[in-house]
Length: 350
Image (cartoon, rainbow, N blue to C red; front, side, top):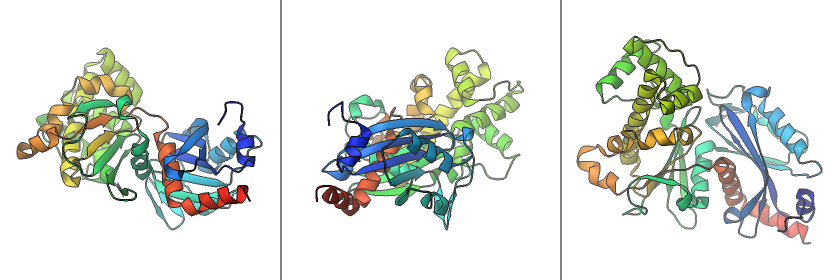
């Protein structure tokens, strides 16, 4: 594929093309991709854009604007990676700024096929496309001591998780709602924070603390426990203040967040038997990388009694790849719709 080849020329030439979308509570990332001869293992991103969800009245409006940005390129297939579950016609996700009707998206002009996958199921599909040398190894050896399932966890607006189980010819991907599970405390301050958060409801979910929104919840609860003013409003403000050590409550919030994340991640690793490796994704942790590295994250991850040697042999990596979601959505689509991709390619050469 030469650099002078336009998007429209690729589509007119019959390449199997796809719009892949990764939709979270804060941002939607869309890409135009082209499948190569090997489908799920061989495709290229031709065009990519990122949108702030709150700036648009609906997901359909974002998709329409992206398609318009492709000018004369006509692509009628969409792979949509979204947090939550599809029930009947709706996507169930408390973090989205609007409701999503699947039938409305499918009925949009020019859409021939719209397929939906859980966002972290998509990220788990993308793991096969990650160059591990570009990820940061936080704990464990570069390679797992034992083969086994791989766990993908990502604090973003909420907290997503999926399991990738090795299997021939393709891995089995199991999406989960780990972020909706009840959060357990271990340290004294964590118990105090849970008591504060339980004033808002009897159950505290993992993502109410270990997510972007959760970072703010944690900061406010810690301020209440310490009797200090909560002057910061946004996750980015808390992270920046912690990095600069400009606010004592923000600094402690980041320390508690990273340590608590390590403890929960160790629990999830044992629960799912994730001896094949753990990958941390999502929009929050890349901004907190320095804080994560100097925190008790690793010690809390390993601190599981007799299971410590098992976890010590499990690689834990931080992935910093903004396009991971769209890559995963495309990989999932090309893998599960391989007959459609072959048909499009054969039709183009007929």
